[in-house]
Amino acid sequence: MLTSFMEGLLCCLPSKSTNVVVPVETSEPIDGFEFVEVKPGRVLRVRHLIPERSVVEQPAGQVGYVSCKRRISVFCNGQLFIENLGDKAAAELKTCQNGDTEPNSTVEVELTHCGDASPLDDVPGSDSVTAGKVVTSETGAVADAPAASQPETSQKRRRRKLKRTVVIDCQRKISACKGTHTDVALFFIHGVGGSLDIWKSQLDFFSRLGYEVIAPDLAGHGCSSAPPIPAAYTFYALAEDMRLIFKRYARKRNILIGHSYGVSFCTFLAHEYPEQIHKMVMINGGGPTALEPSLFSVFNLPSCVLDCLSPLLSWSFLKAGFAHQGAKEKRLLKENNAFNVSAFVLRAMMSGQYWPEGDEVYHAEITVPVLLVHGIHDRFVPVEEDQRMAEILLIGFLKVLEDGSHMVMMECPEAVNTLLHEFFLWEPATPPLPKPKARPETAKAQSDTSKTGANPAKVRPATALQASLKSEAQVKFDRGDK
Image (cartoon, rainbow, N blue to C red; front, side, top):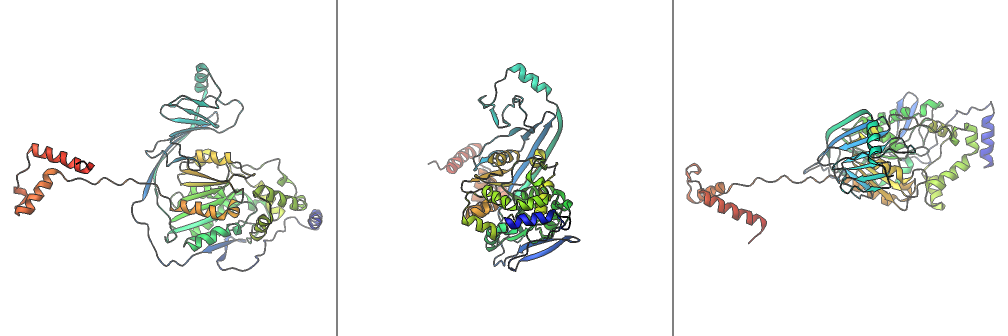
């Protein structure tokens, strides 16, 4: 504590620059690490593991197809109206917490949380959700919604003015991704203060299963270079780094796994490369809101002050990021190089989180299947935000782990690895095509031909009565009746 205080005090003096930042030295050299220069002087450390596959198995059998048809209407009063128009926009595409299905076809949510929310508009044949209130058109029951008279509802409905409409009409091919498939790659992206080392359990687990894994260090984190200017840590600068890393290592089918702030970069890539992104995983990523730095934050303090407060910040991160604060959690932080960044990089990262395009409409346009994993004890991201994200996404599955917090992949590695692997192997159920049945006359003709050896063209057709009786017998046989 005293050492950090003295370093912060010296940092405030004019003789020492606050922008002199060096990356953390790696503890021990391990095979599988690469250093990629995404821009001149901007070098990122990447762990890239390509396992030796004894058996190369290509996807076989029927592939699941999901019809992605949505109409997204944005109104001037801050409402987002989503209509799922596809034939399969039912239980497979609309899921709630822990996989509980909710076959809704229409969703209406508030973009701005104001004091007096407007009443809901009735949508025949569908359900509507607005700011946590649910209205079911079949029963007319309203849950936690304020009572309103019909004239007030009509008045509110007349005031609502359409701002713009977004229509999505495509068909996605979703298949199981196994470790033996050579066209599959897994990308792991960490958040603020982390490094690729926080994915150690996941990287080891999936590389042993035969998956090709790629995990980069963000600029200023881990062993990547740390530019001395704040503009190097804005969302767009970091997103461009991830775009270049993705283009370098991408395969035909790619799965993105993001944690916290890293979820935003995964969303950005899924929106930019919808044909190459096969699936996506969001771990404690938060709600589908546009990013904007907070004006009243401790990270707005000068870097020298943050240096003095670094022990307090580390203790606060341990308290809020883990469900338990014991020797095991402290060892995980130290071994996995988490929250071990300079005060300058931390301040620049927090103040550079400006992404106005990443709003609800941006997330609603994503057609990639998404698995949301949330640690129930997370004090950084409340579970309501991930529930809201699951409502906005077209194909979303929310799983809540009761023993985890913000760093759930480090606290519960076995549970997280199992959830991720099951999701990688998941594919929507496709009903088999009905086989064409032979007509009774044709079957009779073929039978007679095989017995007599006569020309099929010269065989007399069955009478109408014979055809009717044979048709009825065939139906009973198909049903198993005696």
